[in-house]
Image (cartoon, rainbow, N blue to C red; front, top):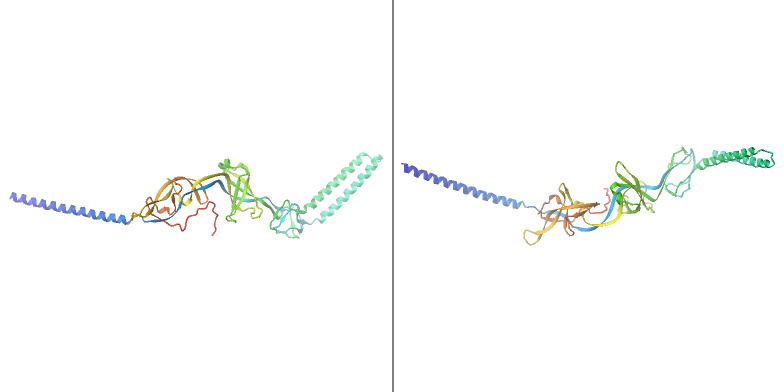
Length: 384
């Protein structure tokens, strides 16, 4: 009986071991099948080809320059007014015309002033006659010296009154204080003007000035006489040449900026006072840098990077497939849409200029340069 039981136990044990072996074999086979499916799925999810724009990195000349925005101003500009009240008798200028210094602009009514002048002149003439007669009498000692002295003082007083009245009459004739271009006027003949009322604006615009500011740390590179190029958005693509003429001796304590003034030739009268402009000061030094569009640079907390398009073997092992390789770069100055790259990129490298957000190392690339990012050293604002 015991032998029978031992035999039965042995059979059960063998059956159990066989079942365990079958189960483990099934689990092993299942893992192989699952891993196969995973491998196929991962292969199917390999990085798709990314479409990007590229350019070949090259060296470019960089003129060391400082840029700022400013406003144009006339060398001389004034709103012509009247010093005395009066009725406008005539307007002797045409709005928008060029006038010379001293040209008559407006004549105020001065009839009563002229009449007063004639009266004062007659009194002065009489004083001169009295003085001459008393001098003759003094020669024969008919009058005292004091009488002649009083006559002389009276004559000088009368002459001073004549001169004062003549000055008043002259002020009724309003003249151009300097040569320039007149603006628009709203004054009409017969209109009464009070002292200080604006008659017309007069601006001397050739040459013209532009005022702008730069940070105080740029003072070491600034000097009177440096070339200044000015661009105005009213004239896209046109650059007006000038020179730095004044460096203000006082720094603004609020902004720590220094005020500058440049003079620009304006023979064609294209520039007007009050226009917005961009002034670029050149210090005469030229450098050579690898130049890339600013869109090619990715800025992050770890540093600036670019993607280089590197050739590699494609799936067929024959053709060359471009792949992305990320590199850290050291950037320098910027100008317009461009940035200077000091380290990290060599001349001749193919650099990705747009489409970097979907890239990582090894991503296959397809290049489409039908539309490329802006790469202008001196872009002009565009209004749409």
